[in-house]
Length: 303
Image (tube, rainbow, N blue to C red):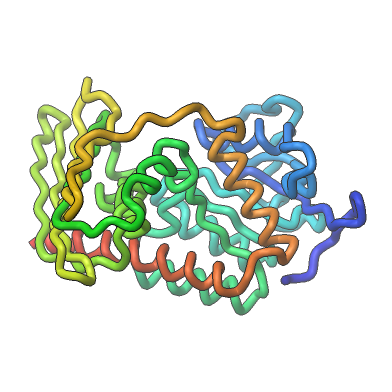
């Protein structure tokens, strides 16, 4: 753990936090930092301010500060990076080099080399680098995993639909959609990309990415990421197992604790040194594997 200026609360360290980027995710992060779950490690996080390119002055009770100030202030120990995907790498690097811990929205970077460099930098600095995984913390996903665990896959399809994205800000669809890729890796283990293609109709703002994989047991999986104006945000599954088929997303009840708060608690546990090395290593391996897959898909689609 890197050195930090910390106050004390209930015998535990306090960590000053800055939120960088105030879009939907950044606003949710501010909300959750100002209203931590009681008796949770999030009570050890203290929101110092936020950084935005827009002149907002104040959001809730959080004050706007400049990027330079955020990097230099001794009472800021950690940054929550909630900027455009294409900006993540640069922001992570700046805060790690300034000796701060980092929580970043996925994808952490848009290339495997960049991601490896950033992990290495975090390790050199002795700082926590946490890539959010709210995609694994939703009730929808937890129910799906319960349905899948212990079953032998024959073949499967995960089809996501949603509105269009600006690739200049979000990155290639395999990166902007890395949450779905993470689902497949978490459910079925390491994957190998066998083929990938993208259909892009610029005048209709339509895109459809199709990627084919094999599991370690040579079972085929297909991931489709389809985006167009008016397309409902939805995930469709068709997983065939030796024991039967799962062709609808299982029903999920509303969580008492939202995924962003769960993710924030995980980050705080890491800051407090309460996550095992084995868990940290497994998480890093999964994140790098997903970025490697996304990069392979991008290369296949560009050819």
